[in-house]
Image (cartoon, rainbow, N blue to C red):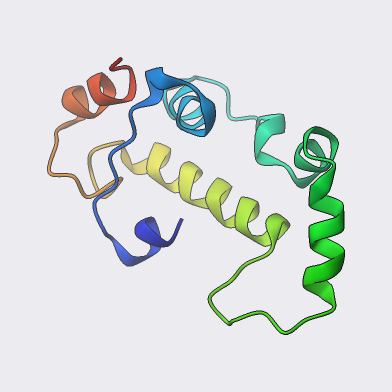
Length: 109
């Protein structure tokens, strides 16, 4: 997330799956609906230790650069919508790749 905010080039190899796969699927997909994997509720359900971690985080002072789950996911979703609106290559990831090359990268294994 910080890379996108700072305009540092971001290369996503989506075909490897995991978080990159979710991002690639969302960026290349037609649906404008936010996927469950990009919601706090999904992470609480899939990662039981997250609730404990969040409770702990609420009891300490976190560094100002640390974002908790919901604001991070909300900011990520906003960036995804922005990138899809302007195009994957144009102002998207700052990689210097064109639209076709960016789509190829997102599906490369």
